[in-house]
Length: 329
Image (cartoon, rainbow, N blue to C red; front, side, top):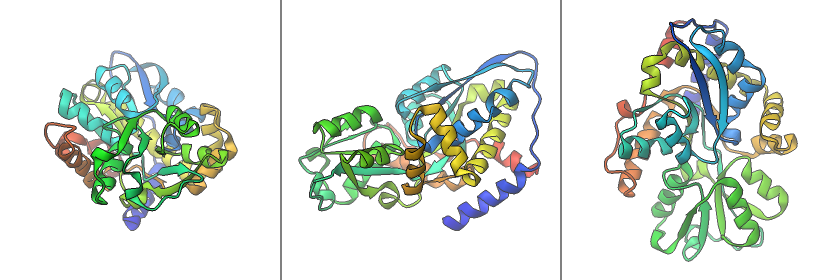
C-alpha cells in the first residue's frame, strides 16, 4: 500500500509541472466549496491561502465567484452537497454512502484527499486495557454514517465488543472535546488536529490510531454531484487540478501548509505542526488507491443497518477526471 501511494504521488509530481488553466462554456455560476476544520483537509486550506481557488477558477468564463463553507462533520456536509447548497466537498468517504443509498443522491468521488488520521482518546488517568474497556462506557465521535463512526463500530465488533453495551454518541469535534473535559463521556474518537489539542491540554491520552484499526484506510475525498459534473465538466476538471497541486504543495511544504491552515481555522500554528507530526495520516489524490476501502465501507454500513443496500464502485466514483488529468501529461 505504501509503495502504491508513493508511485501515485510521484506520477502527480511529474504531472503538476505541465498544469494549465482550463476554459469554460457559456453561462456562469457561483462555486461553493465545502470543507471541515481538520488537518485532513489541508490541501483545501493551502489552495485557499495561495489564492488558487479564487484566482484560477474566476479566470474561467463559467465562474462568477468562488466561496467556501465550513462544516462540523460529514453527514451535514453530504446533505448540503446533495441539495446543491455547495458544489464541491472535501468530505469523509463514508458520509456520502447513506446520501446515495438512502436518498438516491447522485454524488461522485473524483479524487482522494487523505488516509488514516483519527485517534481514539481516553482521560489521562484512565486505565485502558483494550477494546473490552469500552463495554458499559460512552464514546463521542462524529455522527452515524461518518468515517469515524463507521470505523469505530467495526473495530469494536471485530474485537468482540457487544455494541449494545457501548453508548456511541454523535457529536462534532468541539462538542466531543467539551464532553470529555466535563467527564460526560469516557472517550472520544476524532480526526486531527483534535487529538493533539486534547493531549496538549492534559485532558486525554491517545490509546489507538485509526490506521491501527484499519491499515491505510480511506478517509476524506473530493466529491461533486453528477448534476454539477454534467453542467460544468471544465470547472470540475480545474478543481481537480487545483486539488492535486495543493496536495503536492502540502506534502512538500508542511510548515507553510500548517501556517495556511492556522490562518483559515484559527488553530495555533504550533498545534497544527504538532498534529501533522503525530498523526498517522497521509495526503494523497489518486482515487484508485482508496477505491476498495470505500466500497468496503458501503458493505460495512449495510451490515450495520445504516443503508438498505451496498453500493458498487461505479455508484461511488467517477475516475474519468483523474484519468484524463494523468493521460494528458
